[in-house]
Length: 227
Image (tube, rainbow, N blue to C red; front, side):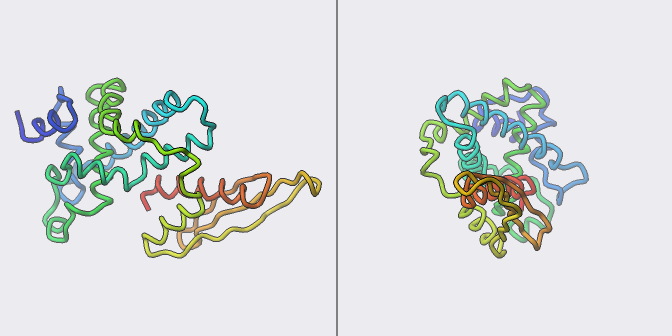
């Protein structure tokens, strides 16, 4: 049994039928032309589905907005880096010489992406049931101690902190349109990150609610793009 296979057995409680999937998942693009970026893309989608499914079952009284906030809390890059540390993903990485010299084994984006790639590899190797079992195992303690969705940070604060961590300015919010009578208005707003050329649009019964929803959509967009 290879070192990678032994690691997967110990860290993931999973035995690969085709170990090539795992080797590919652990290979960064700096190391080979065949690397883990496609598996990362797949793993990201599988992770979101499994966590969405788990939250739907665990939180039967939580509405869509609350479930979305909890999902973002669980699958954000910071959580994946924490899990990567818990399973020593850094020790399994295959990096090119340049990335090794510049500390690629400790780079948050690489660690988070590799966790997702490994989940994609599990999905290809064993299907959804295997991926579900591995993901729920990795997230078990976090799923058992979920915060109340009302205790999570305001989406506007989360977006601002996310961008600040990248050395960027906060997003801009603009009101596009206000419709309805004074006591029953609907606000349509945009949330724009100008340097990246991206924006989201949302509506709400107040400017604050509309901005929060637009900010939440922006956070999801930024995370999808691995900003």
